Image (cartoon, rainbow, N blue to C red):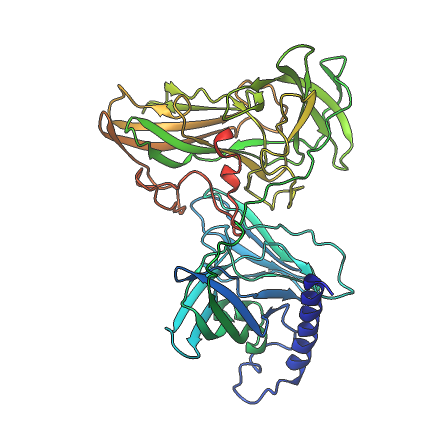
Length: 513
């Protein structure tokens, strides 16, 4: 029996035991179980009896084997904010009706804050510790009941962009997913520990969970790292093939019709803003996303004997049937060592405006390889919860490519970090004062979309300092709090948001972007 099969059977057995234990709980006066409704908890916390982890320099990397199991029906959390001035609202959606969770449980879309409370008590030598961790239900999942649905539709990550607008977390009925967001190490020395893991009271109460559902106790054995070097842990890349483009280049610049379902490109405020190490260049990250009811699909067909492709946007109805196409420009082969792939031109522009909002510096970044790097709003109509082309390995082609297809799915954005000279803004000669970073989608009006009234986003900044040592202050947008930039501006984050599964959706392309 394989390790995966054994774990699945163990989880299934645990689910049955948990259900039996729940039915056997006595409900004496004043007990916690008495205060719960007669409706069974929709989820339970699961843990193995024993977990073994290896300590490296006083830290052990482990998720403790903790899993959340959905029981009789799928468990869904939908989170939204109507503006950056409003807090995030999270709704538990179930067959018995929607339940709005208490405010403050989610401060961003990267999971549920203070979801797990974990205590480690040494069984011998060692130091006791209490740890609080964020929870993410958007993670890889596995079936634990043999009669559960064969597949799960839910997102496989809690993507982070500081200006995301909506997210979905979910577990299919009879499935389990890791309970802990991220893979941060535990500070722990070798030895045996009694671990008590508990879903925090605020969540347990909101989800109708009794202590028997929300708490697990088990043993953690921490061992020393072996004296010989182990195999390096590599970072995986997607090997899923990109969607196939149309078979042949169209004979005419347009044909067919544009359906009622169309993409809708929108820009988020620039973020991750900082002054580069030279002291004279303003670096930032920019995200353009698709809020429409259809994916943005652009196919390229190579011109004979040239390093250029003709680009066509293809249109699809609500059932996914192609209805037509239109010429929208070109793709260009970029031979620079940090690129070596095909760029679609005129997808977006980045401009630094002065206080009266006129142009002072323009980024030379005007060609792009479209990829779904950030889940900006998974609650929009027709949003795709899981995508294939989430990095540059899937959609940008190589020099031998005769045709390619690049896609920006509904609900997803493409983030580029502007940190190279020519793409970041040159501050030399600019006086101190107020400026705006303008992110503009579809600047040449070539792409067909639902509306062009929402293509521009402005982000106010204030420049200070002196040549070679410029500073930037970035006023906060609404309630959004960005982590500090190391060695840079007062607000922002390093290029590349981090999702709960440890990937970096904004920087999967690395220097090739």
